[in-house]
Length: 329
Image (tube, rainbow, N blue to C red; front, side, top):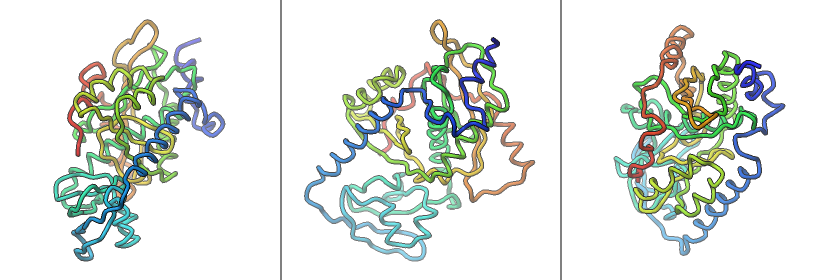
């Protein structure tokens, strides 16, 4: 049977997405265990906060500057937004602490600070755009996990730092086929998975763990295990993880607050990068997305899709892993 037909049977077709939803790159048991470990460590860290200390958070922005009394190591920028208005909760994608530190909306604040809530139409969107691109790569990993059957032998490798000028966000993977050339239907199926995740309005949760726990969580993921020691060494023994739904991966962050902030989205191309071992190959999956607030016509979006099909020149998976650099505070 031709390789293309074999891979078609390993990947969901767009009309059958709900029927084979539970096939993933790792077993459902290991995925469940990873989430259990994440939840347990998250609970342990919250319980270890101990005596609640108050901090002053000086919100800077519309409708007016205001000082909020919040709880150290418990209250998040999203909690601050809840004190301000429903509109702040609905449109805040990211926050900025003390004027220059990008901070996840659901990450607890550690000390008294100033706080700005960022959205996609801020005057200087550079930080928000990079965060959006990084989050799309993270979501693409989740979509790939959801889309492939076990016999495809999918392994998530990594995704390099976001570079908007390249025209695409990416996620590098390993598949048990050296000659796969995805069809338009297969690309549409992956795009549908991205849109499905966006529609679920899933929260991006950040968790910092030690290397030992991270190795336990990713013990069934070859490439993650290889990357963790280097990441840990460069970050004082700590590993930053994110979870969206049941998908957990390594990233320095920050990420957007909710998956709903990914609007129009297309998985535009998949390029083979190199053979890997005796039977596998490395592939680069590339996509383009816009926030829901950005509406452009079909012709303009088609130009973006065409640009996203060109091979993204970001670092290759066998080059130094992005997370080996110092983590963002």
